Amino acid sequence: METVLFQNYEEMSDGLAEEMLRVIREKPEAVIVIATGHSPQLGYQKAVAKIRGEKIDVSRLTLVKLDEWLGLTPEDPATCEYFLQTELIRPLGIREERYIHFAADAEDVEAECERFQAAYDALPAVDLVILGIGMNGHVGLNEPADALQPHFHSIGLDAVTKTHAMLTETDRTVSAGVTMGMRDIFRGEEILVLADGEKKRDGLETLIDGKITTKLPVSVLSLHANLKCYINRESFPDMF
Image (cartoon, rainbow, N blue to C red):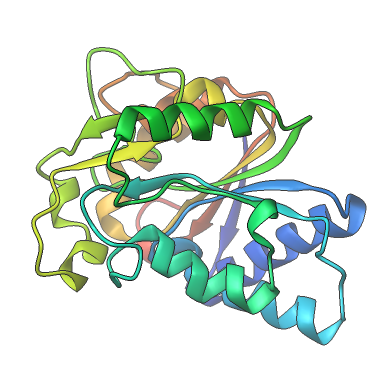
C-alpha cells in the first residue's frame, strides 16, 4: 500500500482531483467507481472545475455508483444518487448510458441488484475505485460481519452507519442499503482510499498495520496489489 500524507482536507481533495484527472487523461474511456460523502466531496468539486477549465472530454468516461441507501426517493437529499447527480453527473454532463447506478426506490431490490451486477460485469475493465472509510471500518456498505459478500447485494445497516451524516438530510428511517461487494471492488486496477475524520481512526490504523479482519472490512483492501491511501493528517495529528 502506498500512503500519501496531506496537511489538511483541501490538500487531500486536490490530490483526489489530480488522480481522477490523471486517469481520465491517460484513458478517456476510463471506468471510475465513485463513493459519496464528505471525504470525496471537495475533491469531486475540484475535479469538475479542472475538467471544465481545461475542456477535457469526458464523453467516453463511465462512472459507477458504489452504494446506496434503500427506501428513499432518488430526489431525497440524503441519497447517494442526489449527491452524485449534484457533484458529478450533471456538472460533467454524464449521459445515462455512461452511469451505472442503483435506484434507491427500486420495488424489487434483488432484481435491481442483478441488473446492476450484469451491467458492472459487462465492463471490460475498471480503472479506479474511490473509497472512504466508514466510522465502523466499513467500505462501501460492506458492514462488519463474520463474512463479507463478493458481489452487489442488499444489507442491513450497522447501528453506527445509521448515524451517518447523509441520513440527517431525510426525515425517513433508513435501515438497509445496497453495495458493491468486495470482489467487485477488487476489480479496480487501482483503489484509492480517503482517510478523513477522526472517527475513522480504527479502520485506518488496522489498514496501515496490515492486519486483516472482516470486523473492519476496510482492512481487507490491504490485499489489493495497487492500493493508495490518501490521509488528511489534520484528522489524525498524533498518528503521523
